[in-house]
Amino acid sequence: MKCRVCRGPAVIDLKRHNANFCGEHFLRFCNSQVEKAIGEYDMFTKEDKLLVAVSGGKDSLAVWAILIELGYQADGLYIGLGIGDYSDISGQYAKDFAEARDLNLHVVDLVEEYGYDVPNGSKAAKRVPCSACGMSKRHIFDRVALEHGYDVLVTGHNLDDEAAVLFGNVLHWQTDYLARQHPVLPERDGMPRKVKPLVRLDEREMAAYCVVSGIDYMLDECPMSAGNSHLRYKDALNLVEQNSPGTKQAFFHKFLSQGAPFFADAGEEARAELGTCATCGGPTPNDVCAFCRLVERAGGQPVKLTRAPARS
Amino acid sequence: MIVELRNPTRTVEFDEAMSVAKLLNRLKVDRGSVLVICDGTLVPYDSKLAADAVVEIRNVISGGAA
Image (cartoon, rainbow over all chains, first blue to last red; front, top):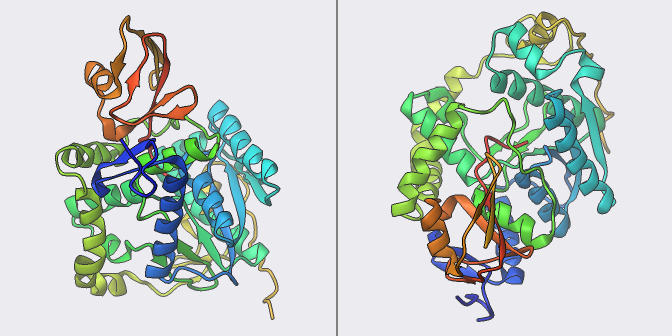
């Protein structure tokens, strides 16, 4: 098997691209796919301050590495979720990555700062763990971005993640969610723009990027994610992909180009006027935001949002 | 050949050399869901693995990001 570019020995075969690459040209391929996504969806420029949400897993560490390689100003944010050894080990991967590359990593620990962890928070709020976890992370992403003046929040969602979410939204015809499913969520009410530069790369490609470029990442899965519907949707899509390579890519990217416009009205209807949370000061359609209600039920203490002074 | 797998973590041994494709077929593993790593290096689908190779089959499917 030979590299499509240099005809040297290939290390990976990409069926959906009908291509094989050596290590060097595979890394260049990944960089070019990220650059293409950034340009295609007008995500950000080299003047923007980026905050990359890192979990210690392959996708978030890879996207951080690629953005630095491409010359963007990108710092990291790791959130300690209090999920036992899993959180301790994943946090260490994120810290080691940042330290080895002399990058700036913000660390927020749920237990230390808010007085609760995801396992207890989800029980107290009667939410499934992934829901309580996601809500907590989204709130803290916004908080840290606001406090430190970041323009854009970057996450490591890849093509498989987005295709699985789209599949779930279509199965349940969640039209308001379909309206919002896009690689860029614009800034709103002082919250940063949110972007997903890995939407042109799949999970296998991101894991391969880490292996080829020498990035150590957390291999174990979150013990609380077992059996979640997102994983079942991925399994279903992978079954289709096995026989029809490229199906996931077509499903997601053709939705963006051809399907999403049909749901734009649902998005407008669902976009309620936002007020200010009486507890933390963040945006919410209610008196108290869902995150502060979760913190209160879990017996923790909320943290007031502060905003970085505007840059000239 | 010693083959290490994860989720759950386990080790499988084979006596003979074989290709990556054959190994994945024997283990009933979908090639699109894993990477095959030998001596720290990615190996493609058509590579031949030696009888004394130590091979890691790394699952790449995760529950979410960040």
